Image (cartoon, rainbow, N blue to C red):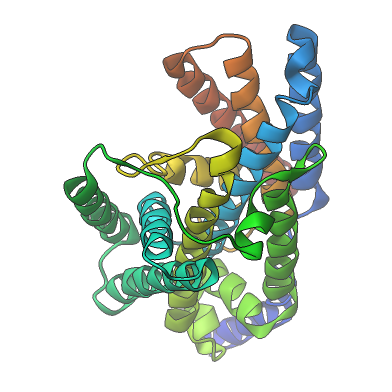
Length: 339
């Protein structure tokens, strides 16, 4: 009888907390804002060009692209999973959108097909992990190498230029308005939409409940399997959108795309930005706002290191240290909440 009463109380507490348990205190937002400010001040002192017209737009562009990937990854991490295949989805989406456009498809149609491809990969990732009980780390790692291996096998070290028709949508994804890349405004819109989904819809409640306590959520009627599959689909769809949007920057930074290396390593950066934004790796907690700011802190930090002449190996080491520091801050914050 005592066990039944305890279980009832736990369920009642979980019922009250489901809509609000997903809230991350302002500590995470404040932490990443302070980190962003420190990074800006530090590199502005080391290099006066850091906030200049040549560097700042690039920081905003890279941050917006990384932010889109990190927000998708955040959905998956909140439900207690991880997706290592997003960089390969990103690369394939760029290939699909480019080749279809070059063969007569309007760019909007090419982008929609690329996003549909991403949704399919996300659905497969979710199906494999939930129906066949294969850990997401293994399933998405396998998917990553399947996609990357085929990309390299089919295209090798080739470069492909965009030769499709002009498109208003493509123009809205590329170029910039003043200092601000147009993709930055797309990112803001996506972040607002995802914030609404996560905090003001039933699927958002389900996602947080699934990651917080799957068994309790299931007992309360939450379809945890569907929540996890939906999170994988959202994550891959956003990765595909970012890959398809990459074509828009061709006139800005380059005239062609290196197919085999597209997006290489972005999955790690997306995970890092999500964790830096306070997303709990154990699931159940996450903040769209904090992750969005963390993506720009991450891109600012990397750009600053490049600007002062740091090489790739030193950059990777410095980024790893930054990630560990953020994790320590999270741990200290949780410890202080418990005391």
